[in-house]
Amino acid sequence: MEDLMRKLKEARDYINAKTGNLKKYAGLVLGSGLGDLADEIENKIIIPYKDIPNFPVSTVQGHAGRLVIGKLEGRVVLCMQGRFHFYEGWGMDQVVFPIQVMHMLGIERLILTNAAGCVNKNWEPGNLMLITDHLKLTTHENPMRGKNEDELGLRFFDMSRAYDPELADVVRKVAKGLDIPLKEGVYMFFAGPSFETPAEIRAARLLGADAAGMSTVPEVIAAAHCGMRTVGISCMTNMAAGILDQPLNHTEVLETGIKVHNQFAALIKGIVREF
Image (cartoon, rainbow, N blue to C red; front, top):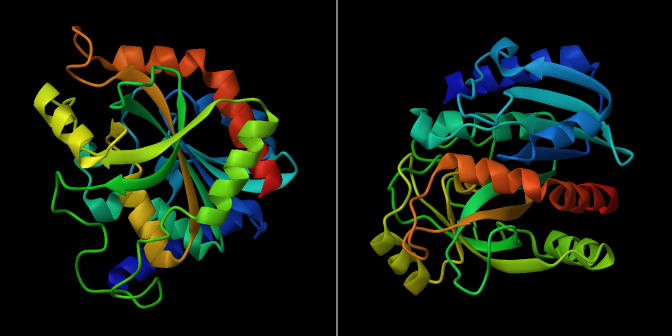
């Protein structure tokens, strides 16, 4: 773990050298279909992941693979334009490395976004969902497994407020003010890269899941370990396996993300403004 702290500090120092130790107010992770929001950041500083010491490099279509730092709605944000996934072959520790770097940079508030399959039969593609809780039962892997690093957080840490209730109220307020319909529900993590089977989705529904996806949950766990206040928002890009009589594909995910981009982006900007 001493090696982890060295790597985190190297990444932190590199980013600070590029930004002049600019105080960053919030962290933002942009999922599939929302990456263009980073283009609206003013006075931006762009740092490709490949240039940051010890950073993985995103390989997923629709993920630009760079940090964008600057002002959004008057707030200084550090934006991940693309994230890392367990299914890409990264270890869980590598998947959450950028979240831990954000913590090292002094960021205390985190907004996570993703594209998800809709498990709730009463919803439809294009719906936005405030994540109120999650399920992670399909893999034993946990990003905090191994020797604990006390500089980051406690060995055993609380997950009952992993999705910050007060910040969730901010999201509800913003959505209402913008007249954006907002669902609320539970996100279930699947390791991927294969989409879920119809039986798995039926099981997810029985367990109380409303959405299914392949990201976000490891990041939330790492953020909770570091004491970061987090909100998560999913875009339902397709009905999950078995609900409709049609195969699933990543193209549909990207297409739906593009269709709801303006609404999703407006919501995120409103949240940043109110944070």
